[in-house]
Image 1 (cartoon, rainbow, N blue to C red):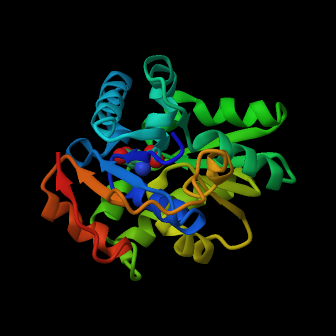
Image 2: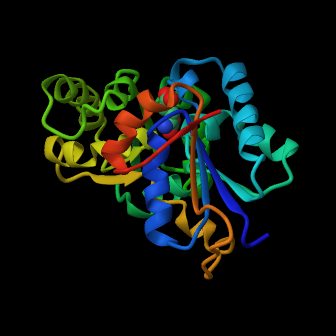
Length: 258
Ligand code: DGL
């Protein structure tokens, strides 16, 4: 179904960094995006909870005619992907494998640091994905539990002392590891790229919000379709509350609560 919707989900505004990347690369794409804001952050949840939220997200998105599901959430991709693939007949695209591939292509010393949520780090998904591309590469996982709540408060647009202190403490671990490449293994962290480059210049930075586009190429349509709404934005908590931070990223955005 080439002219169906691309269903995209995340726990929150991290998914909008993915939506923006899709919109820039494939402007004709029809998108239905769901932020499971009621259960955000996913990073501190159990694997069972993350699987259950992910199944529910796909079920909500499936109310629309979908052609594929893009998991715009490393935490969900790391834990729920296999279950989704088993239970869902649609193509499922994730963000982890493409980011790992890109990092391996950039790293010269084969030491790759991954900043991600606690749940993603604990799952070992990046270790597995990187070793699929380079068995000898070493992955240094840096769980960053304090970042998602700060980003959801919109504290990334301007210099912010608390964000800087927290981010610097995680980047110190990256620096100490000797890695020459850093994966931002949470889609929320894409908004931190300017801060990362300022605090730790000279490291290759790979954002999981931007590496999956090649995997979409075969699915996207080149024609415009004016018969249905082009973009639909859903969330699972108060729509007006959620819109306030979301609008910092996509001005004029409106959400429906589901
Ligand atoms: N943006 C998500 C990720 O890529 C989820 C962050 C969270 O809810 O903890 O992991």
